[in-house]
Image 1 (spheres, rainbow, N blue to C red):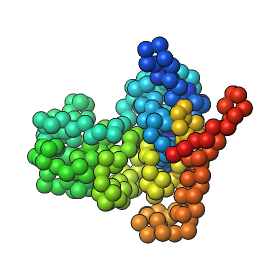
Image 2 (image 1 turned 90 degrees about the vertical axis):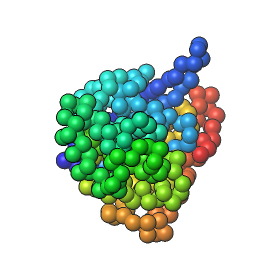
Image 3 (image 1 turned 180 degrees about the vertical axis):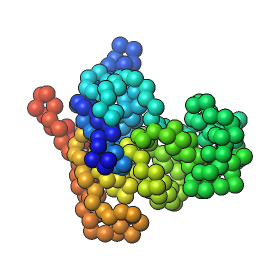
Image 4 (image 1 turned 45 degrees about the vertical axis):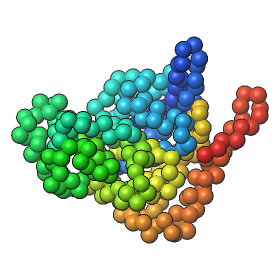
Length: 267
C-alpha cells in the first residue's frame, strides 16, 4: 500500500569517536519513506547522509532515537535490506553473473537457479551479453548497474542507495538516472537515496529532505510534484526551477546554536 510507512527514523542522534574526541554527526534527524516511494536525502559532503543509511540498515546504532522498518524496532540490528554503498564492491575475481548471484546463493539457491535468475534480469539492467565478463572489463556505468542488480536480488522492499552515480561522468550519470527510474517503476521498491546533486534529487524523487552541514539536521522536507513518468524535459520547466531555488535556499539555512548566534550553513 502506497501510504504504508516502510522506514521511519525518529529523532536520531549519532556521534563518531576518534580516540577521546567526540564528533557529532547527526542531530535530531527524523524522516520516513512510504511503501513504493522514492525519497532523497540531499546535503553537502560530510553532513551525515551516509550515516543515515548505515543506521537505517542496522550497521550503526544511533546514540538516541528509534529506527522502525514495517513498524518493527530495529535499532542497531542488521536488516535484510538492499543497501548499496558508494563503491560498487564487485569482487574482481568473479564474473558479473557470479557477483550478481551472491544474494541468491546466500539464501541457498542452487547455482543453476541463481544464475538463471540473473540471466533473466540482465536485459532490464542493460547488461545482456555481459554475464561472463569480469568487473575490469566493464565500464563504470555497467559496474554500477551490476551492483544495483545484486542489490535488487536481495529482494527487500527497501533499498538504501548511497550516491550510486557520484563517481560517474555527467553524461553517464544522466543516462543512469533515467534507467534507475525505469527500474524503480518496474519493481516498485521503497528507495532512500543519498545525493549531493540538487538536480538529481528533484528529478528522481517524490520527496526530498535537505540536511545541513555536520552535525546534520533536517532543514526542510520538500514534496516534488512533477508528473511521472519523467523525462529530462522537466529540467527546463518553471516548476523544476522553483524546486531548485527552494532547495538552494534550504542548503544555506541558518540555525541558532546554544549561545544564540546564528551559523550559516553552506553547501
